[in-house]
Length: 211
Image 1: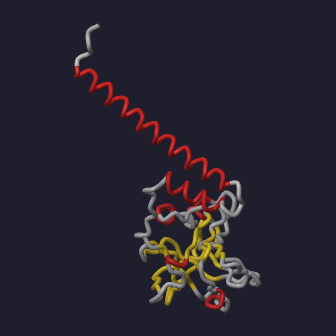
Image 2: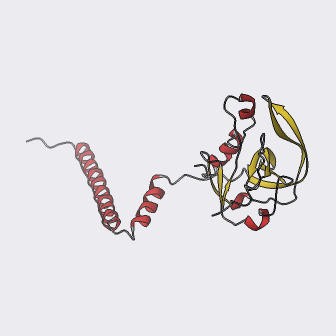
């Protein structure tokens, strides 16, 4: 019976070796996965398991904090009442930012767009609780104001229309709500609401802090 040429035998042996190596790798991975699933049954180990799984699935996911989001008090500004869609509204101009931010970028844990609220890592209640409508603020991206506002304590009977407001009295649990009064059918007034401005949301999304 004729023998196979030596060249054919070497190819066959090489393919067999590659198959056995690949099969061994599959067995090893299956063993590791089985072990991780077994420890996942423990409620104590579940956070560890999911952390490992996320790292394995998204090893290259990085958060971009190059764009800084900050909230500044205004050291000075000019306020005026203007007509917006037939409604008296507050307008802020000639604003000058304070030297240091009230809320630095590192102080912001996340932002919830549906409620226009910042979750902070620090308590600023002591710094704002005595402020009223004569005190202004600016929400900035890389120190460029996105929108202005004033502090408006909830006990005041008046309303502030046209700019965002912060209630310094009802600030609790390190959650900073940005309020804005809208009037149904007043499109011009709605356009002044920049709490979810694209520049702000894009910066928050890039840093993984948008909810």
